[in-house]
Length: 243
Image (tube, rainbow, N blue to C red; front, side):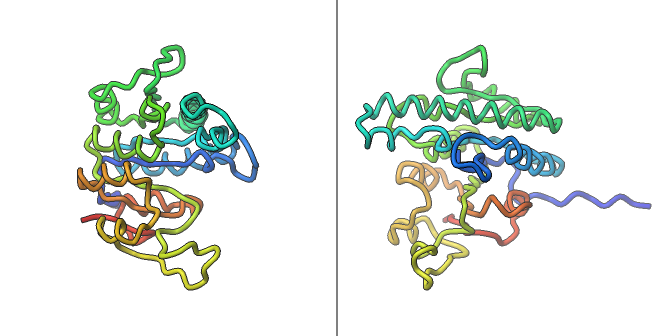
């Protein structure tokens, strides 16, 4: 009896951008171990189709520097606090992945050797080539840059074929679908159409990096199980922003 061959992924080296809120589950704050485990199980399935996977995760479930600055906190200090929140999330996701027997490395842009490797581009690429999942933590290491920008920057540095932006909605819309019932979901967009329409794909710095380096962006709903795999296989889900 012949074995069923594994599907061929459209993208070989993938950058997955997760928001910190993705780890909340049904909680209002912090980290849901059950949600981390569910994400880890999906990533384990992805690794079985021979994909090199890197992850950038936000810290909004714990602390947002921009939100802190609106309440009087120094913006630079707030952004560093937000970077440390991403390290906490990275370690939580690493724990969940390794409990599911997925080899993982965390690389931090802020040096903290007791818990993570420092970010070294060539080492990160080597980990990917060896089949390990690499989680990039602590943003870019600089204030005033979002984790979207981190994802776009690291994707460019490692030569990723695509940036998958996992969100709470199933793509990019012409307006907020929660408030406008006539909002239209786009299946495909060019970079220029997204810019001209002022569509909130990513912040402008992140978007410009992807456009300059011709990295397609796939925006999709993380909370439908199997969507990460579908996006990697090139199935028509969410919105694809490309040339």
